[in-house]
Image (cartoon, rainbow, N blue to C red; front, top):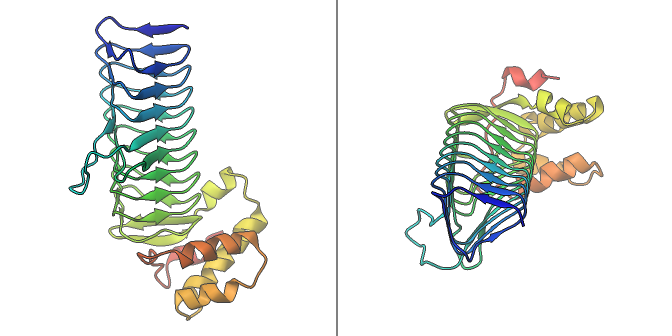
Length: 267
């Protein structure tokens, strides 16, 4: 097994380190840690107990993974942080363990987490999410696949964000953001569908048009949004089904889309 550990690093002999791992200067790796192959820890990284890191990850200086949650209800139960494969975690990132016996804070495969981001307890980040500098996520926040989060955005606890959304920098996100939307503001409001992100993700022009029409019906039909969603439920469109299911579970309410906003007619 080829593992390179700098002489100043402290690595528990109980930790599981797979092939081709580099542990940089002054890192600390705890007992109950599993690090996948081809992963690099830069200087001063700390990986605490109950942390599992996938293959091909790169974790930069002064990041701390697996620290106990900032929650008064935490009773030192066994809970975890799981990091997927090929995740980039830049400098000064903090990712906390979950609350609840056996619960897990999750970062999915191929995520890019930039400098100073904080992921609180029980956060669930799906695959291919990009989070810019110093965004903060309170407990139990979930973010769907392919979403992009701007720098310094803040997320209230229990907020849910759907797939392929774009969250503007400095946004204050206090209500759920349904899939495929562009939101911005303090508090965050909808400004249209995430057209650029959807194009890059391979959504067809027809799909984007369907999504725009679905949201026009939900937000601007004159019906209460849950009633409007129920009227879509009879359809067989998979995108409609995804949006309707998300709306049905939006216990914090949905980020508003003001009438007359420019985004209503965006392609």
